[in-house]
Each structure stands twice: as C-alpha cells, then as structure tokens.
Length: 197
Image (cartoon, rainbow, N blue to C red; front, side, top):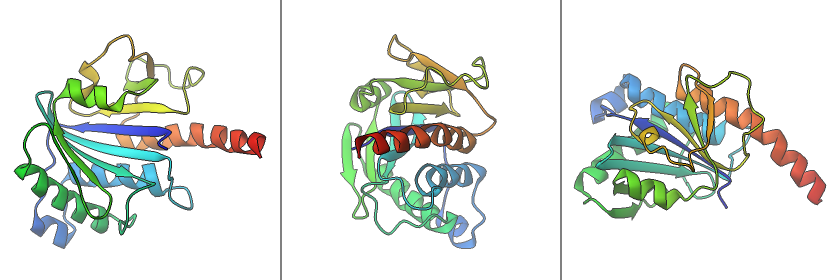
C-alpha cells in the first residue's frame, strides 16, 4: 500500500538516446533521476510504500511516469539506469492517447491525462504543496501519508481546492524537498511499527 506519493511537475524533459548513452543528460533529466533516487532508494533499502511520479506537460495533457517502490523491478539507483527508463517511458508516452494508462514490464506505470483526472485518480487524503510562502520548520501539520507536490512548471499546484490544505517549505530543488519529507516521515512510521509489534 502506498503511504506517500511524490509528484514532481516539469514543463518538459529534454532527453534522447545520445544523452543517456553519454551520461550528458539535460538538467531536467538529472533532477528527475535524483527525485526517483532520493524518494525510493536513499534509505539503505528500497521504500516499498512510496511512489514518485514525474509529471511532464501542461494541465490539458500531462505525461505521468510513476515509479512505485513496491512494484518496480530492474531499476537501479544510478542516473544511467533511471534515465534509460525515463527515455523508454517518454518514447512510449509519445505514442499513447490522452486518457490511457500503460504498465511497463518493470513495473513503471505510464499515464497520459489532464490535470483534473490526475488529481482525482490520486485521491489523497491529505495534499502537501511545496510553497515559498511556507515556514521553513513548520512540520506540525504534516501527515506521514498523502500526496507531496513540488511543481517546477506551476501546473499541478494550480489545482488548489479545499483538499490542497497543507503548504510546506519549498527548498531550492525538488530532491531536497523529497529528502526533507522522508526524513520527517520515516521516524513516524518506525515508531508506529514498534507500537504495533
């Protein structure tokens, strides 16, 4: 079961075969790879209850690549591995129609959708948005479960309704935001597991 879902919004991710082979990836590709690495792999093992979605495009046509710790196979934490799967995913998404979902054989889930359907599909109980107006150390309202959004394209965070209730400090990059959230939430989960045992 997914406890935390991270969504990172990009306007575009320039990526091609030559970049991936040479390791000279675009800044956007590097950031996306770091987000997957920090969300899923930076804990000594894989976080099986965490998912990170790389969302590319605008609110009318979003290409979403979701890496779930409990489902992915053959994905290593290094940039070369993650970027090669990002490239495959982007090429497949180019051929997909709006409103469709596809499962890659390694467990990565692809969807092409619009913003309202994307948010509805996540149906998170609590949504947290990285926002520059939020206090840097205000974690008291943070749920260990729910959706955590860092939007580089100002697309996902436009959908602010009453459910989008918690604003979190926005560091300079999304991978730091993910690291901060996991650093805060991991001890909460550990203490709950100890209480239940």
